[in-house]
Image 1 (cartoon, rainbow, N blue to C red):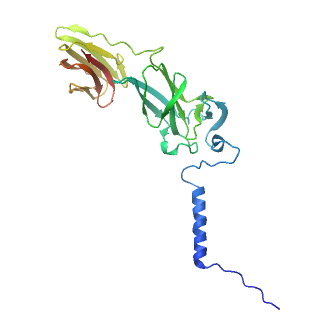
Image 2 (cartoon, rainbow, N blue to C red):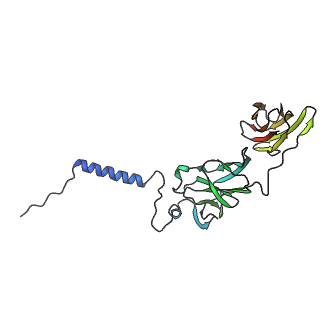
Length: 269
């Protein structure tokens, strides 16, 4: 009668390698960046639908809406300022949101993603940071927030977005008209928070003309006239005066250092 064959025992090295391989498989399947793999027959948007409610509705570019309660959804505001070489510089202020370019194409996670720019109704590009630039001639700019899986963040069935009208319905306000004084011309500017009055535009000057800038700010800051390298400390609520002779021709910006606001532009001919 034949004796039963003893069970086969793996050598210790083989068993250890098998355990390490199993651990690697578990780690790559869980944690880290959300995977982009999904079941056959489902879209990437459907496969990453764990955040918010994925709606059947789409925006005009074809991206499905991903709805969140208003208290949890991101928000965006847009500011534009004319660029000295043409076009507009765009600055976004976002809430409950951060830009995650390294995760683009991954799963939709709360408060992450990128922005898309729509110029005059047509998608023109993406932003992966708060700053961008759009060309001259733009009439309407829409900035829309998207998740990493390219779905559009939405509230109450509408995309999370901000709209700015430029050359169309609301062009930049005309330059403030400097009033003559005994010593030249004077421009009064008031800064309240991030608002500049009159709105930033251009002051036309003749070479050799004297200009007085009288600025009242609601916070401590520093006035800087580019090109002339003139600076002036600003104290909260106290008018500050800077007088210069426009002896250099060209386009020169007047800004604040701390708040980074454009106050006006000087055009000297």
